[in-house]
Length: 444
Image (cartoon, rainbow, N blue to C red):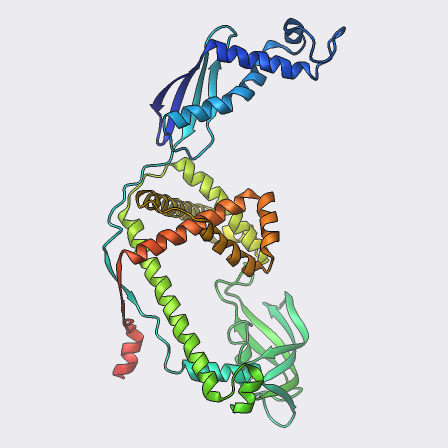
């Protein structure tokens, strides 16, 4: 077999392949045998009809096609291996000249991995802002614990407070027209932790049992419903019930009920340890991200549009599934952003993802970073825990969907390269910069 290569546009390589007449003829005769097994020829058992009769019945071109389907996977794979082509897509045949008795000539195209030029990625010195624990973080955590274990008591002799829970009837309208889904009966609302429209819960404070009144609010500009975003709305509201929280006292007896603690000090120490671990993890993640971002920025690669188009198509499918799970209309998102702007961002995201992947693979190759079985086992355990399924069931899913294994392998390699980058660069954790608003408050 002879192969000549020619670089086409971007990262596309044209392969002109010549297969010997004997190998091509053998493939043709094998195709005749396979076809004869299921073709009925009068006077002959299946598989016993002469070649000439098979050719006359199914046509020579059909046999050639069968021969190529059997021969070309091996030929193309051999051509790629012998020429050490780093391909990212399956090759496809653009033309062929196939006459039995002569050499078979085939032209095929294949996309190769774009060449990455690494810049500085080791020995760098970087700074990352600390993720400090807020001074009142412990007090807030203790208060949240008390709130979670609070009891509620119905009150009738006072107006609502910002910490109360109420049950209300409400009915909303915009410009006199009822809002679709904008009404409820005996709806429980926590005034201190409301996810209603901004300003709604606040206007319920200071109201009494059985009060009926109107409140005015404005839907946010980023509201998911196009008809309502930025619109002023009026809600008719009635207070049906007011409940107050009775917070438990922070005592040794209380903490013993809520966890494996003997004293309040034990609980405080546990919370403090958790917050310190959270801070440490956040600093590590931020350090990894900063080093990785710098290494990516220092590398250069020309990404062909064909790769971006494929990745953008994959990203679009992911976005659609994510939005559907959240009950958000895909068409509405595109309309809100504008199709041209949305496509632009999609292509930018695709290009970023491709570059990240290419640089990771290049660093792994240069530094000879290999995936071990333990790396994949770790990913299997993480996925198993995240979705609460046994690893045995996970293996079954991978057997049905090999793409899962490919994705996990890429994630595991990403982790190893990130660990390598963090170990081979210096990151200084510095105090966070004060915002202008914070400075202003201090000055005042």
